[in-house]
Image (cartoon, rainbow, N blue to C red; front, side):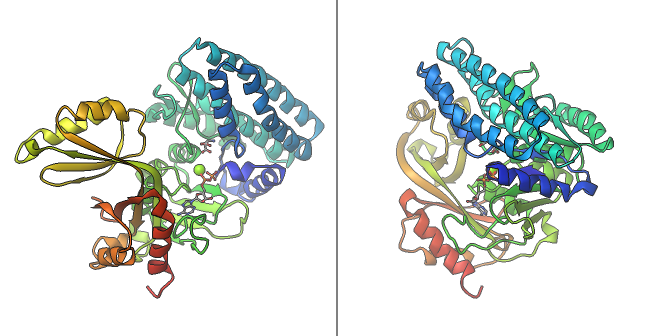
Length: 449
Ligand code: ADP
Ligand code: ASP
Ligand code: MG
């Protein structure tokens, strides 16, 4: 059972979580929690402030968030538990002070310090949730995720080393479960083989939950969030979006990758490997059913299931006459991206050009410089990828026509019908996203389709 930031945003939310966990007692739950909402952002802000040399302000900026934790413990736990949590908080503050001072002096690599700083969100929320569950007479026991999830040392988006992670989770958590305990751990955080704190990337608590679920061969992985399941599109864009009853792994993976924030893109993989169902539900409305994500055979094939989008995209158009009939050109291009550790999302090609989209442009300048040695490069910024997902896209003719007719007023580029064939992906200008999505949503969900 994974609870996101808004599911542990205040005392009321913590109390609801404890109740939801209590309701699953006979199913031997394991609880994975995110940091309280806004805490990860606050820790990143403190890191940036310390980087500029202002350690005092960095620490001060965190104080209101420490207080939010204290309020929860005062409202929901007894005196002894409050005292124990205050001790945890005291140590955390001192460690953070020390880390932020190191940031300002750059006495260790900054990427390493950043993960260490940001990990305190989940370190604190998981300890607090353990106390809250204990106060509700649940046999909760805190487990330090840094002893359970082993990763490489790619700070900021570390990759788990599966065999070791599986072994540690089984050793520690299975024996805890066998004793009738409910393990409570922080999502998102892990440690490298040498014991340094690492993180799995923003939104990574979902991924932690899936890793734990897979290692324990769980019957179900539950993602508890602030909306009722996976919807036909982001409800923040389309308030009329509807909850999907079921979704296939394949569809969920495409949606998550192309921006449906409700699931971390990597969440689905450990579940797919072991065919574990993933349930997405609303911690604010626990009685509502939510969405089940299942192997495809068990889902219905509605034409289009959902529409996702990702903003802040940059397109590169790479053109070279040399490409005509030449081999090795594509490989030369992709090697450049590999060298600069830059991930490509959507790719389309013609005989003399390759167009592709980038989400992360940290190394854009260096990438373009290298590309210009072999081709002409044109850059288009402020773009957005839109992804229409549904197994029905696989073999239904006319869907593409329907999509593009609905949005014929907009300029569309880089159209791609992904290899999995469950998605139709294309790029529009960022400022058109809202309108494009609304039109598509109207076309596929508000009419008799
Ligand atoms: P958590 O803190 O629980 O991990 P997130 O903010 O990461 O929650 O994800 C939940 C949010 O994802 C929702 O509030 C919603 O705005 C957004 N979202 C985007 N696309 C979708 C979608 N297709 N279905 C449901 N939620 C979506
Ligand atoms: N707290 C982390 C974040 O805000 C991880 C998560 O919430 O999943 O990105
Ligand atoms: Mg999330």
